[in-house]
Image (cartoon, rainbow, N blue to C red; front, side):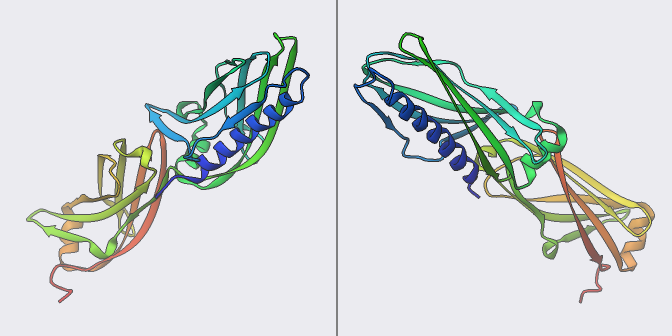
Length: 277
């Protein structure tokens, strides 16, 4: 999958704010030399993840043809959920846009996953949704005699970092041993390209009508696409029973990333060895 919608929306909002600020500056007395903006060809900007910090960066070139520097150009931002709680907030480093030259602003939005409430983190990692995105720009002009501030609110549609994780029960196979059974459960994961090479944990628990009868867990390193098999062992009396009897089983499949987890539940009808033929 391409994790594009959030990137497009964020960059559009950021660029719109920059242009709005430039329009204001263009009518300031003495700013008669002209102002020009060169937007990046890649409208999605560049997403990166380092440790637990997620960053969107997009370069914007601004030519200031006026007589005065644009000083301490700063962007602050907030993400708010449907109840108005602040989920993420941050502020860029102040940048000066010198008179008579072109300055490249690397506009960045930083999301520290460790700073997010666990319930919101689950939404960001695994779920689609919408957030109110509030951005404020503050800058100075005419040797800091003039201070300019502008703010814009927008609704941002969010796409999950992990779009899909699913088991393929039609391809389940098993191995019969003297004292235990091994059930091999194929699964796949579709996620944002930025997560390639990142580690996450997959867990599986299998139960009958009365109790848990087996489990498995492994740490994986994500590729794109990612297809794998989770081997789950059932032993003891449960294994002995399943050798000769069919049974309805429940499989709980859990994926964990950066402290957030999501689960899928499957119903699987076990058929004893030899009964399918």
